[in-house]
Image 1 (tube, rainbow, N blue to C red):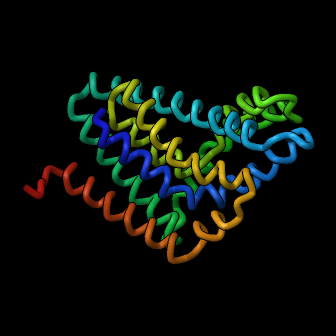
Image 2: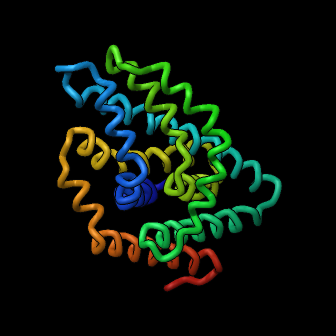
Image 3: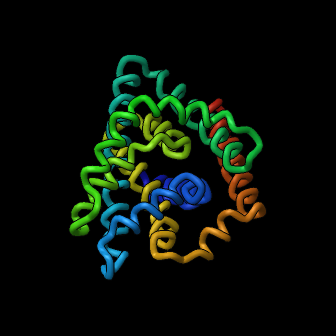
Length: 223
């Protein structure tokens, strides 16, 4: 995977932070309450997010492996996977922009696995040290999320285990700044990313990028 692909994944995570605020705001609040009184929040918040991103990387590796198996069986499968990835990115743009909420149904597919995983997180709270926040974050990294699922289709389309993991690493690092600032109580972040104009700019940017990917996947080129 090129550095440009990693940077693009980072930007999608950063752009998708608007969704993280809505989806994970309650989780961040619960995280702060699990921290011992008079302890610095940052080490716990960082450990939680490292755990969360670790799960993203694992999921990316698994989907990359699946994509690799598909392309080995059928060379044309790579183009199909790339097409699916572009479509999901377009659905994500519609979701963030509030134009169409069909991606919620995709999120609901993960609730069956989540009902078995979510109780595990309770075994790590309250936190006795930042290390307890690490596995807590790893569990919550599997929370059903349309943003994550859309990014995983990109990892799937990579057709490679390592590349899939790197894509989700870039995505996870993109979500990190907003998640850390939220945990530290920087309320201005939430106000900015929830602003209707900001959401529309992000959604339109993602939609244009998705259309570009579709255009190229279908065999066209600008040059």
